[in-house]
Length: 286
Image (cartoon, rainbow, N blue to C red; front, side):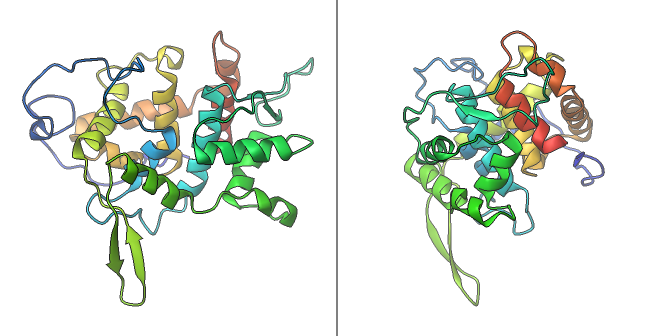
């Protein structure tokens, strides 16, 4: 699934700060007060979930809605939900066993059903708890998206996910709510109001594959690694790389393809790896 091949003709942009974000969008050349990759729990910055970050990347800043042609973001957001639960240690994969079952054949097991503090995560936890026998990661992405031929599984579909995430971002002061008239119908939209939060998000992704690139996924921040994968799976990663000049764009896409070409099975058995993370990656790149 190499969406980076032959995307668009890049624009040559001369950047003074060398980081792929226009200098005037960052204010003065001040050093950041903290490492943006470290979650220290005390930051006053707007805290976003993985789902909210992917949606924010996909939203058109002024129009306040995602592309009508994007048919990938729905399943991508469900993948984000499963990874969030995995990172919060709410779910895990069943043991590989003596026959070393692959990531895509192992079942997703509920580990901790205590509320996660997010409506979408808690709704998913309830579905997981009510399901016996357990299902695979790939099956859950299909069920939560409503993309299943089994009518008995349609009850697991998470509805209005984009709108619910957008409302979360409105509550956090990142977006606002407007009504737009499209001739035949009115649609609720959510234009961007907090440019700083989105600029910081774009910069985090750019830095991860350029200035902070370590050529080892095990040394990368797990949430940032998941963000890159799921943004690509949701077909919104191009929005983060759009400000880059041609050389940086090609380098960034090359490194994203390197991540996609990893042996997920091998990565998942390395020390301190989160197997749910790699199982979701495998589901989107099979």
